[in-house]
Amino acid sequence: MSDSNSTDYTNPSYFILLGIPGLETAHVWISIPFCVMYLTALLGNFTILLIVRMEPSLHTPMYYFLCMLAIVDLVLSTSTIPKMLSIFWLNSKEIHFSACLTQFYFINCFSVMESGIIVALAVDRYVAICDPLRHSTILTNSIVAKMSLATLIRGGLLVLPYPFLARRLPYCKSNIIAHTYCEHIAVVKLACADIRISSYYGLLVTFLVTVPDVCFITFSYTQILRAIFSLPTKEARLKTFGTCSSHVCVILVFNIPALFSFLTHRFGHNVPLYFHIIFANMYLLVPPMLNPIIYGVRTKQIWDRLLQLFTHKGT
Image (tube, rainbow, N blue to C red; front, side, top):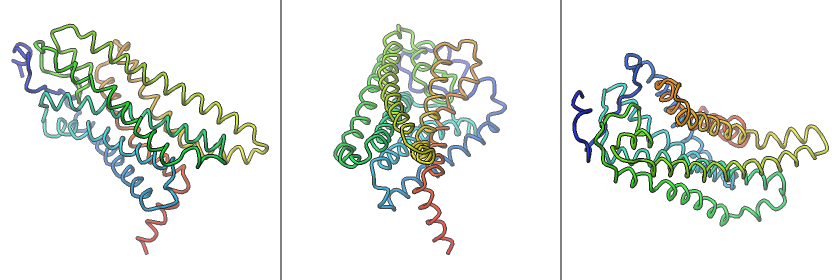
């Protein structure tokens, strides 16, 4: 470890992840809530996938997108938490150079995909509430497949330059990463070369993803709210808003931590490092844990099918 800062790592074979610097003595205790949240995310998202597959009435665009969201959440949480737990429990801090690049590719790629799926869900709610009679003719299986494919391609292609730009850099400062996983900027900052291309491209991707997605979501929910407030009775307004309230919660759960993590990483120089690292992990774990809970509680069809599943098993 002491030689890591002085050795020439022009082509490092591995990096060393420190975990949460400053809280090493509390690593085991910190791992407990993270492990519980991860297991909850696994159970919840697999349950959503199982219920949608078993229930033919749920084979609609909204639930197809929800299944995509569940798969993306599983990949996001699994790409970081097992390695973090191995650091905390087994002191397994080494990660191969290629594995490190793969990890931050998956983290960024599937984060972009999740944002796109949330937009697709917003479009689905917009059509369902603002033009319900044409919902099945507008969002056909073909259109849903094209929207899904576009979401996957956008995430895969936009983030693809990340590992290639990072691989071409010479690393001679250190091979120690003060984090629980390979964060893109944390890795390229170890290079002893100009990293402005990687940094600016990261900002460009953030801009190209965030601005259009926020615009689409804002437009969709502006139209949805107009449609809701134009309904004649309070009961009708509450019932209609209830059909998309779960999606509103998912939007807030994903975007608020994402925005906070981005701002603290770029501009929060006075924020303690351990706080940034903990929050960066929460950002990748809280949405995968809460999304199936939100949809399970707020969506009657899923809740009823889940109760039916357990009732039949009980009898």
